[in-house]
Length: 236
Image (cartoon, rainbow, N blue to C red; front, top):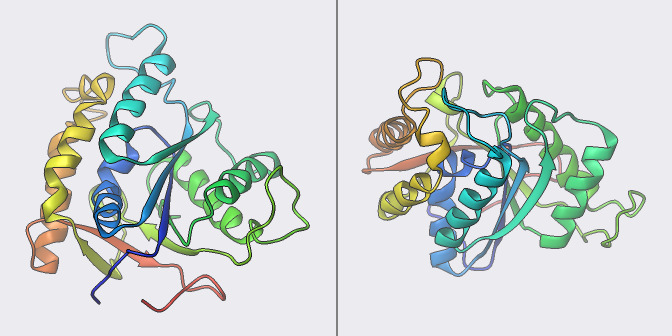
């Protein structure tokens, strides 16, 4: 499968401010280089991801870090403003995500795997799945009008590739340096690299890109699965 994103609008819906760097930033960058519009929706504020030496006003710090990373990517940025650990698939949170989807009007959504390790990732996955359907339903009222059709939906790889069987790979070799630069914007999280319960983010990101790249025969890749539900998959 050889992809060209030139006429697409890609929206990544992730839980935390550094999740896109780990799982899909290379694909977003490649899509932008093809001429696509790209958006990044981050649902949680990152307010509880404290290093061993706590950071004052962490949510404000992480907002600045996210802004810097999004500028490097050139993505339109949307925020859910949910607190870490409190993200859940409720109708109120669905409406918030539906409105973001309607405002950006994507043709393709990238979302966390339903099997990822983090509760916020799984909640974000459920919200992305629901919003990607109800965004086209006029009966679900938000300030923006319903879209004419649901966008396609791809599940992103899991963190550390555990329990994820790739359906296909996107070659992001040209964008590995951008992924590095974006991740370096998240200094508050890079400080957690020496913690056993967290681990070094940069090494994790580059290992995963190299491992998926080795499977795909390139230097760096990101892995995805197509969500093959009715009216949610597309031919490429």
